[in-house]
Length: 331
Image 1: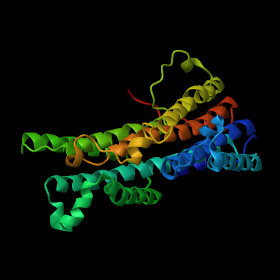
Image 2: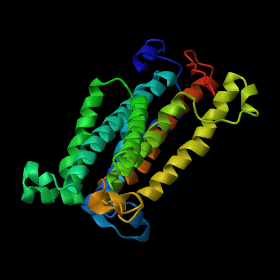
Image 3: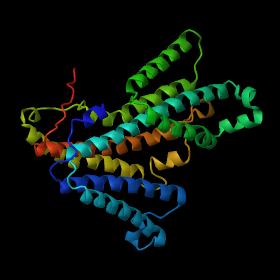
Image 4: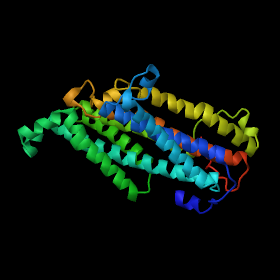
């Protein structure tokens, strides 16, 4: 669908330096923020905040330089491509987000299927039959499972997404229903139930709702109370959408990112870096740390999509050609 739309949208258009500088600066800040979070959590860098207290040293200034580099790169790009249309930029940003969400779908699909199989064999003491008792002990360690089982599957998901063209939300919904059906049959027909079965449903449910949100925004499928908006002209809608994206959308995403990734003990960094598991322990799936990261992924994908939406809204405000008509939502 992205390729089909790309042929209908002019690449060259009226210059919009202010809007493009804002949008690409926001994306640059996002990338720099995530890199600095990686440096703080995994490599013990002090972060930027310590500079306000007069500390930090060279490590903190390196964190600052990360922001500076990405800001400069984004500004150079915008200033060297002044005639790129806003709708083309919106489509490019959306295209990257589609790939990211598609890769995440494949990742949670692979991790879910493999981890539930490993968890079942761990609960039923079958791992030793296939890999030996000594090696099977590794599968009781969440850190080992996360590094040597989950992470390779996530990488595989990103590779598969390069060749796949489906976002997979429909299939993920079907898999959730199948998993729920499996629980019902197992419980009431065979009187068999394990914590891992409910863990799989929760894992895929969380992925479905949090990963699909950005694409729902693109398709204009979110709930909107159209008391005044429905009567606005297209240019007026673009004006309110552009400012609403900045004041409500981007700000909300940044609040989630700041709280979730604010240091090693934050609500996302702490469970993820410690490979946290649920209270069911070894009888359940080792995916709770990933579910904590889902909230961060939600904020990241929504922020990226908000920038795409901002570009498109400014183009509507300026009444530029190539406006995309979202498919009507049937209730």
